[in-house]
Image (cartoon, rainbow over all chains, first blue to last red; front, side, top):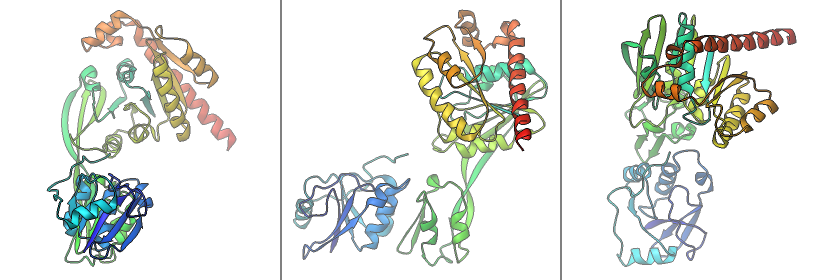
Length: 119
Length: 288
């Protein structure tokens, strides 16, 4: 299955970016093969409004069914929920460690957004 | 004629100047309180409110039976107010700026408009002075749509005095745009000057003639006066830091009512503004 992880860089050893909508990269990782696609989120990172909504749509379009990130706001959460993408927040460390924790089942799914909306 | 009273910094005396000018002139004036996030001009003008009206701004409503999920609507929206995921369309009403773009580009005609409540318009008068204010709905983040509605409700046959919100962003622009004159109220402090400079830049972008009222004119330093001179901004009125004025204010009383000698100063302020507008009009017609 595919898991999206927000990242500061383009490698599995890059640090997880705690931001969702405005993370510079989002890595779409196949948890079975460790193959991954790097999505440049740069356009979104500079979005005027609704970066989280755009990023959520993109994650869903890429076929990911789980998102791992630091913080997820209410609009992004709503969009992900509508798309059937589950959210794991409070993720820190490297992308590789996040995926490892996911594969070992050491994660908790968020029931709601953990960040307030931005204006 | 429309005179917008703005400031940059908050608490410099926009409401004091707007209300006192309206009271000094009396007949033929309509005061609009466009500080819709915290309207307070009514506390000083004390108009009788005759009616109130709930106002809305249009936001999209998607008919999923017609939608083909082509995403043209979400692609055109600069504010990401629409998201299409799978066979779902989410509308984030609070992000929508009511441009109608999504409705125009929808090839299936699946989008119509519904309303998002902006707040309330209150209409009233104090004797022959007309009064309108807007009160933003608690939780509404965008004030310009309501400010525009307050302005649209104004009587164009009367002199419109606008009590603008503080700052230099969209709400202030909405309260200044299209005005014949912007009267900037400032105080001679570094803080007042800093924000005045930002506000003057905004007014210049809009191409509206401007002048200054310096309130609490005997506190702080001389920087505001020097800035005004350098920038050729006429100082049309100075109000001293006078305990009697402050006491009257604290009781909701107005300068022109408590101290009759101020009535003619506010009338003169209006005539000076009128003269500047007329001179500018002539210069424009000569240039043409």
